[in-house]
Length: 435
Ligand code: NDP
Image (tube, rainbow, N blue to C red; front, top):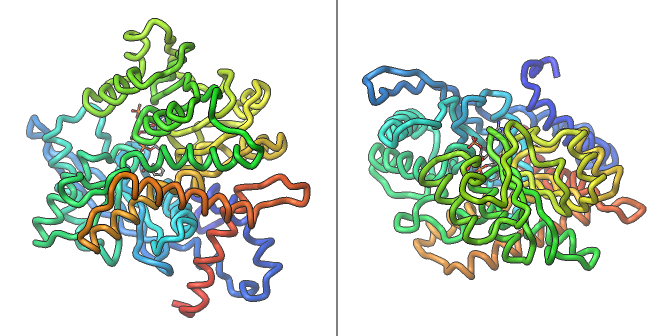
């Protein structure tokens, strides 16, 4: 704790894992006394670098770039890049640490990493984004590779940014390899990758509901965020017969009493992905909707909540409001969106709660499938990838139940995901010795 005293998000993520994994270690001779968790919390490598770039007016700016290479015991480092002004070492270490467990859960051979920059893409022109990405990659390239470390997108890094990053990597290295995932379809990308995190979050929730013979059909769903994960979680929930009533961004949320249907979602995708506008414009366009400035959607009545924006966006009082309003299922699309107080409230109320490292693992799993296709120099169809994604989410759900079922039958998915993720990485680290 003392060593990482100024890293609150990282400590929060480690604390949650330690609470569930330490008792397990104590009960299992092969892990006990090996300081295995202590080794896991220290990144194998943390890289920090300068990114200078020139804006459209010729002014020079300096941002900070990072790559945290957390653990490569079971495969090359894998994890997204985040461009957001809040990015710092604590946030990236928390994300990289979570990624290790998540990637292990996918059953695919991927270690964990995360990176990014405190660069703010909001309000920047395409040319400025391109110059930033090119300069970012002109340093990052020496630390990554298709067998070493394979970054992907995250907040602020979507298809456009991955394109610019890949272009520079290809130029400097003079090779075309699967060094990034989330690529465009015509240059090495995989079908279903854009949809995968949001779809996977809903598939996971569906698996949880099925344990009680329930489904999405006819349910009211509250979604936060309006980015990649939120858009496709909404799309899949609609497909499964639910009514999605909210979306949000950092300025507030919209509530649409009639539900967000496929046409309205198309408008949101255009608004957010092409126009790069604000979610408040949804309420200008559709009179059935109201925009609530500066608020999150958790006090609206819903059966299922899918937090898909960012860390610590759903607090203890929000959890209480959700439970009081009859919510039966929360599946995290974002990373660590629910605070520890919120998670405790869900567990005490014994409603379904899925932690992001299990429920949003569909994104990185499909990135793993993109890596496989790149290695094979082959493409799978949309159905092939979607079927593999669904199977992986089912397998992760089963693992969580196996390790997380309490004596009274309630499944603590946090405990299940942490222990299942831990076991595979710990076994690999033990087999490879102290390195
Ligand atoms: P996007 O950049 O596409 O969208 C992020 C959304 O969250 C935007 O609506 C954004 O609003 C909102 N948001 C960001 N920061 C804040 C904040 N501080 N307060 C309130 N709202 C905020 O990112 P993604 O959809 O890719 O990522 C969302 C979450 O999902 C993140 O936690 C990410 O780590 C996680 N995730 C993503 C994966 C992926 O495949 N993309 C995989 C696994 C997890 P605004 O536009 O106003 O900034």
